Length: 124
Image (cartoon, rainbow, N blue to C red; front, side, top):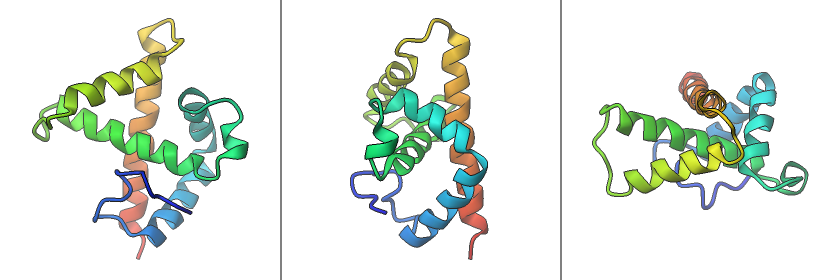
C-alpha cells in the first residue's frame, strides 16, 4: 500500500502499518460506502485498475471531516479553506439533482472518516 501523495494520511499522526490495518477493518464493514464514493470520485473502472482506490476514498473522507471542522469553527480557517470547500462540493455534487444527494455523500464521507479514526485509535 502506498500513501504517497495522500496528504491527510501522510500526516505525522498516522503510522502506515496501522493505517492499513484500520482501513482493512473499516472496509469489511463499509464496503458499499467505499464503492459508492469511488463511483463519484474516481473515473470509471478505477476500482479494478487503481490499487490505492480505497486509500484515495479514505483520504478524501478525512479531508471532508477536516473541512467540516473548519466550517463549524472547531478549527481555524486555513488559507486554502475556500478552495478546499469548493473542490469537495463540486466533486461530490457533479451530476446530482438535489441537496439531499449531496448531503448523503457528505455524511457518508464524514462517517467513514470518524469511524476510521476510532478504529485507528483502538489499534495497538
